[in-house]
Image (cartoon, rainbow, N blue to C red; front, top):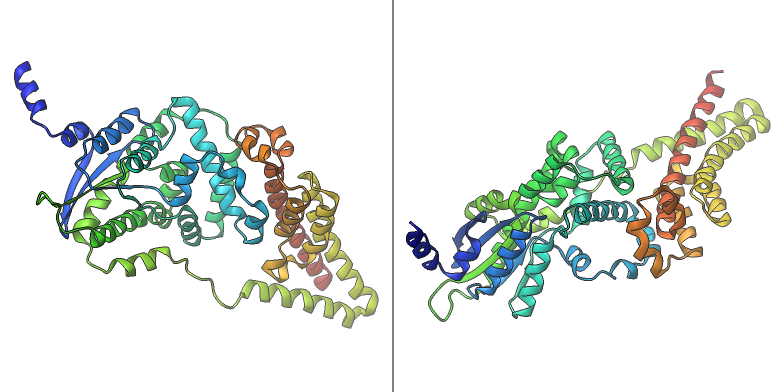
Length: 420
């Protein structure tokens, strides 16, 4: 029996030995043989399997479930410190930065609890491929695009719940539950991070999981289109694709069945549906405000009209400024919040949270040390006010919250004037 087992083992090729016991599938298409290795993002055995498969020398190129940004964060610890936070705010990417921060905090909790870096097998695949001079293909969709498409698929209540989950993820410091860890071993990092919401929303699940299955399969089809038809030894060109185990069956299905042109599929999956060109809510709110002020001047003269304007400015400006002050904003940031809050409902570019956070980031530019300490500091309440990066995020969220409450308060007061 022992000799039989030894014979079976020794008869395996080095690549087959590396994959033994690991979930994997082989798909041959367009003259290319894809070996899809399903990994667990928190498993040392997955790291060993990836490294052994690449070391076997049987593969001509390596594809991994990463985009350029995630690869950089895994292989370059100082990448975060080089980020231009002022540019992030100016380009309206504060929400995406917060989502990435929540994901990083979640990964750190896993690393500390399990003593293994989440995504270590993807990092090993990238580094080993480069070391051996193999072409490396990053096949996953950029996280920001996935997050934007996911949010677009939700209503305002769904976006609110995801936003609350992001904030909770940045503050959380408890251990990750056993059930969640087991799910991660069979699934995907993004699915695990936002799994609660994905399970409740088919649209969110489609953006985070199903679309990425199709996206990665399409990127592999692009790899096939650029690959040589055969190697010198007559064997087909061989690609090792390292992906989370949860994507394995979806990738196999799309690789075997999809026929649409790759560039058409990618164009569709990389697009973010545009909102209506007519900002109805902003227009209606603007009409309500201007009409209310005009009604006040017409019905009650200068005194009533001026009183309505003053009440609106105080309700929105003061509450927006209070939010900024609670976040520990610079006096000029608080002033910016007060000035911009009454104008926020009229145009997205005047959003008080963005304006005050921009002023804060300009006046108190985060240092290298702030970025390096960020992941530790956001684990404590005190750290949020101590760290300049975290404080800018607080400024954005609390100023926006204060302004939002002020808009409702000011609007209700105006209605009270109309019907009082």
